[in-house]
Image 1: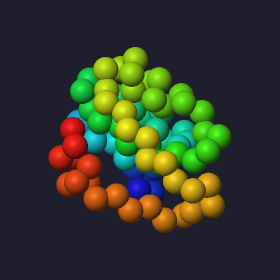
Image 2: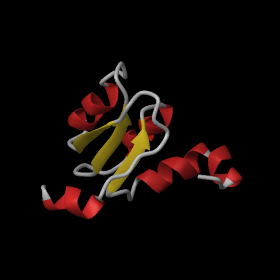
Image 3: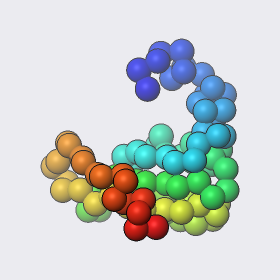
Length: 89
């Protein structure tokens, strides 16, 4: 988020995750907010070779669906057709 107030307020960030149905993010500390999301949420993580599996384990322990989105290690762009992706599940 580019909202400086939201980024400075941990409680605000946690509150935003409490109603999330889908969480999409790159591997990193921001995905730790998954802890605040409801059971049954979907976590889609952009992962590169060598990333730990910690967020897949977290999603599993919290009763969430987890989908890794593999990328090339040097790639900065990502594209996923969410409609096609969702139709598969």
